Structures are given as structure tokens and as C-alpha cells.
Amino acid sequence: MDLSVDEAEHSMEMHLPYLSKVFQGHNVKVVPILVGALNSQNEAMYGQLLSKYLDDPKNFFSISSDFCHWGTRFSYTYYDKSHGAIHKSIEALDRMGMEIIETGNPDAFKQYLQEYENTICGRHPISVFLSMLKHCSTKIKIGFVRYEQSSQCKSMRDSSVSYASAAAKVDTPAEEEKD
Image (tube, rainbow, N blue to C red; front, side, top):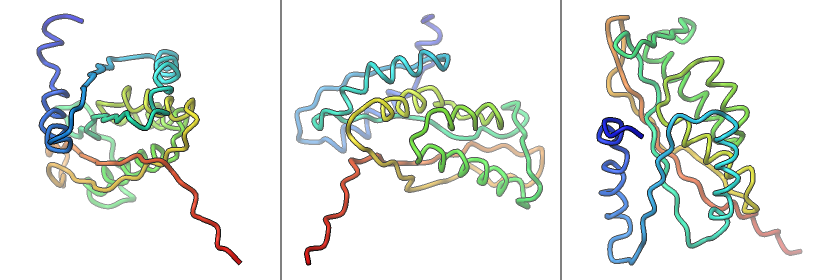
């Protein structure tokens, strides 16, 4: 990667304070994996390679991404007027992607991105993680817990970035009731 790309990358700076707080008092090793702009085949390949680490309960993965970057300054102004105000259209678009991510299906996520061209900057790390889920033996469930927008766009001159938080955990079946 070019030095300028490396210097502009900020995901680790976003993650380290969070990880430091969460794991305070615990001896942990951090292995940063920077996922660039990969094609679908490489996303699947890296997902398969990393899936064995997802099966190890000692490992923790933190994947970072903003969601929709909306506005002319981002060259993205998708607007479905059936949802009402622009910010509602953005939320519907993001929630559609979030629901697909929750299914764990990397192919459905790729199709969503191709159809709507949503400007999810971490689409490649998300796709690698979804491929990891596809290839690991542990059943993992993803659930989104929060969604926000930097501003509520009401006109085509406005701009906004969306943020969504999710957690992935081992999906344990409920114990069967005893007779």
C-alpha cells in the first residue's frame, strides 16, 4: 500500500481506544488486519482462510465500517421518495443492508451493494467476515444494536454519514423443555 494510503487509514485509531477499554485488565494481543478494496473472490478466499480463527473461542474480531455516506460531496444521492424525507430513505436503505448482514449471507450482501451502490466504506471487511461465517463450523448470529445518522437530510444540498453497531455471538440453541 502507498504511504499516503497508510497514513490516511484511521480504523485502528478508532478501534484501539474501544478495545483498550473493553479489555482493560486483561492481557490481550491485537492482530490488525487491514482489508483493502478486494474483489469478491478474494473476500471469499480470505474469509475461508480466517474462518478457523472464528472457531477458536479465545479470539475476538472487531470489524469497522460506517454506513451510507449520502450527499453530493460523497457523489451518492440515492433517494426513494416512497419513504418520505431523504433521511428516512437513507435509513431504509441502511436497514435493508443491516438485515442482509444479519442473515450472514455474503452473496446477498454483495447483491445488495451491486443493486443500490450504498457507500458502506467497510463493505470489504464486512464481506470477509460474512465469508468467515459461511466457512466456520461455529454457528454465529449477528444482531444490530444501534443506528444513527450524522444529520437528518431534508434537501439534496444536505449530507450525512450513517453509523450502525452490531454484535456477533455464538448462537446457542435454547435448551429443550424437559417433560
